[in-house]
Length: 212
Image (cartoon, rainbow, N blue to C red; front, side):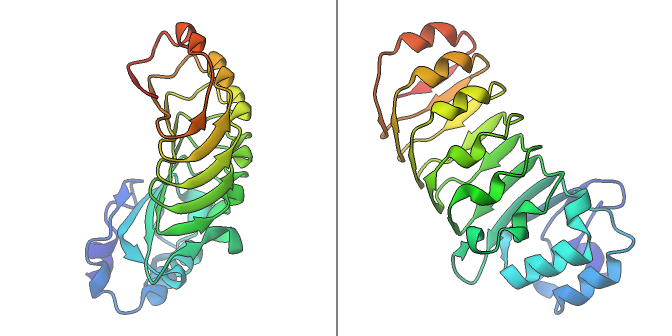
């Protein structure tokens, strides 16, 4: 059936793909129709979905209560997530989040305290990273080629970080925060405004990739 082509392996907590997405004429009707019986934990919509289509799925499939992993590309123009944060910050159980074609501040992620992987590379998100300070479960943070800026000192609390990608951004200040990130394996900070002694490297005994 059409629903089966767009949503596969959901009843067993498996991934959901966007295969067949284009053949579904009424996304909202689909969401409402199967929302009571499907339990979606993983969702891949990198083929593109409009804000309206995403909202229909979010409500119809009760994703706020079940979704653990989301990869989503917004279609129909760049979407300022901070203008309607409930489209994302209602995902209370989300652990892996990758968004494309978005803009605005990172304020929408500050309540997503279960996040382990946040990927917003090559988007138009901007401003301070201080909204991330409560995301103490983060293991991967990827914001390269964005407009984020300011100090990274608060990152010293994110001691579970293993991968940090901030190349080609406007982040600035001291690198001393890295001393406490002893789990880091991958660190990309090239083409930023950061400056300091490299003495912190002696604490990063797990480091495998470094670009400054």
